Length: 387
Image (cartoon, rainbow, N blue to C red; front, side, top):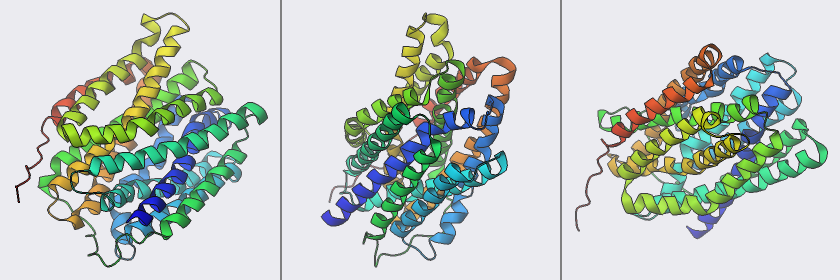
């Protein structure tokens, strides 16, 4: 187990570096190279999130042939191809969309199976701790990847082809590491598709995470880039700071999940999201320059750090699952539901942004966070029966 744990953590680190490069450069790349506006940026999220919507079917097919670790390696191959396409084969919007879809397939496969790999390497009652370790490794990788981009952007300028070559190389190395894992050999194969009423709260929480993800990944960063003109090097620095905090905070927040339980943690996360949305909406109204931007930077970093709490969904599912074979397909169903929201919300939000202003995007998101708080209060974890 120790060998597999070390390899899995290193694979997560390299994946984190590749993913961090892509995330931190995407908004600036779309603005500077393809000259996209907010409405078009919202539409781009539809193809980017389409693989997530189809993940229940993709994972269902892959599970007939591959173990979760092998699926992780396949995910890294897609990620690398997508990054290279971004760097060298995206002269127009059509090919841009093609490579976004390819990269997104890899991104969503890995997010389906990484939690399962972590659970298989965890002890009973310490699932949050182990998944927090994996989150810390991912953040450490992000520090390395984003740190390299920050330095390159400062020294050489925004050479996006170089950025994406580096991301592709990191993803391919992570794939090699995933192929070396022996986790799951000889175990009963996971089911292809699972849909149960028992997991309805998990599905609802997945939808809420889809909202949170889009606010942070799309419109949180878009406020900084399009409204305040923040450069890619500054976005990289913010992401670097958030990732550095995450190296410590993710394992700690994993322990908090084990100590306080998923109900408390996920409900508190929704309240934190409400505060973050209000900061994005009204920072420039309540604070003069440049202090409004400092508040936005704080909101951006806080939101990124609190992403660590998403592992509470996975630990909650393990505790209520009828059998271990339910976990991977149920996570894939959760991702599909997540992406029903993720595919529609940016388009609607883009229209709202253009028609009524960016503040209304975050006011509506804050209202949804309040509703999410009450959904999370419905979480019930069965008590362990003493042996």
